[in-house]
Length: 192
Image (cartoon, rainbow, N blue to C red; front, side):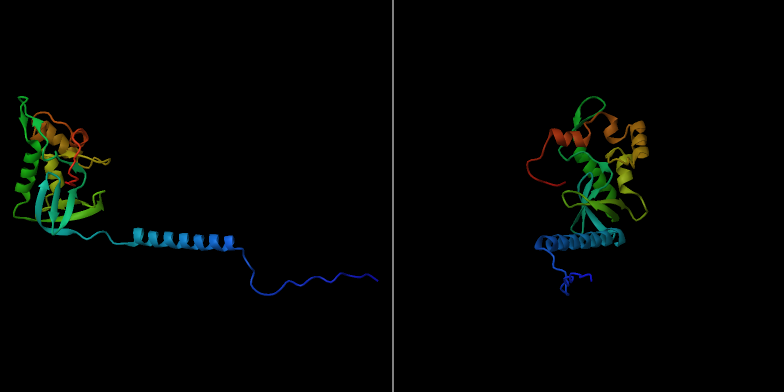
């Protein structure tokens, strides 16, 4: 006769996990849930609604419509305090002139601005148009009051046109606005 040792019965019921295993499991579930929410917001949301109305011009590439600060995307205008050199080598207030030109162009018109994103100052980065469809960002570059900026170089043709015609900033010489800001850091924390 062969005797078999009775097998021990496993207790029935839930499997007990260690506290570390449970903690890791909860963190994994929270992480997956967070990524799901992020993905849904990122890929399924509608684009930002256009901002429309009368604009207050702060400088050559920044304006406000109905309390929303807007930075004209893909362009860079001289800072208000920036000076440039004319064809004869004399200083002139190109930053103030760029601001005045933008103000003159949009005065009396409602702009429609399509936000693309926001910058580190919380300003809406947008392309703005006049009621007749004129792209204000492109107009500023074409008239020589701003330069193209950003990796896409969206307004290169307008900049080439302004350079060839020696319009605005291109009539003499100037320090690119980005370089000028690095050489003249602000101490007043303004976000224009």
